[in-house]
Image (cartoon, rainbow, N blue to C red; front, side, top):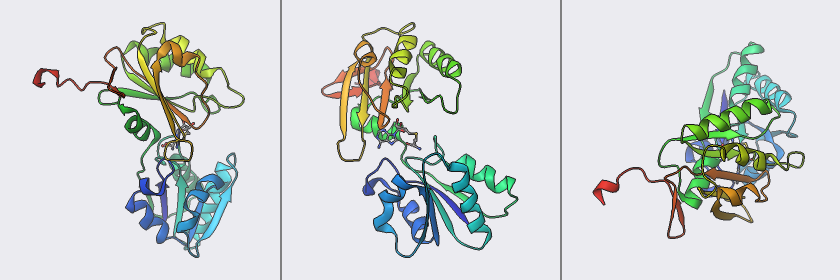
Length: 243
Ligand code: SAH
């Protein structure tokens, strides 16, 4: 049996009871070291298969082999395991290795919803989610998605907005979006959601272009209806007629 589990943004209270049940029922827990550390206090005698960030395929193979050998295995990702997480790779690896095991994906709270909750309610209407990481997607494709999402008036959530090697990606992304929407569009970002150093900022798109964000930041770019209400970022759902 393999459970593919999302751990939420980073604090114990945002892990779902269903994810906790899977972890408790497992013989083996696999995942990137940082995520294993988030749940280390929950582990009793489970074997830990932890690997560095770049060894995803090896980690999935080791988990699949453990399941073939009769173990109950939990593969953990941050947020939701099916959103820029390990879920698809785990399923593909089992299929390719012809390992006949039950697989259950357990949903977690993804950064888009936890960031939105910190900021207020910016995702109450249609939105698009785009990762700025060009490790697995060509940059031209990312540019195309940004451009069309802005043209379609989606609120846009950006994952992986920056890294050591990609300092100017957020700037480039904002420039593309600003070809279609105004620089005074309200936006926000949240760093370290549910972790030490959580910090949120509401600002305009033009200001966001020059903001300094890191890889533990989730960015929300509003659309023409997004506004600041009190200290919250809000995209109206459209109930104005009943107010
Ligand atoms: N599976 C994860 C996403 C992994 S991609 C999920 O569903 O949330 C990694 C990106 O997610 C980061 O670069 C950042 O943009 C976002 N992210 C994940 N956890 C975060 C957190 N605790 N605080 C802020 N952003 C986070």
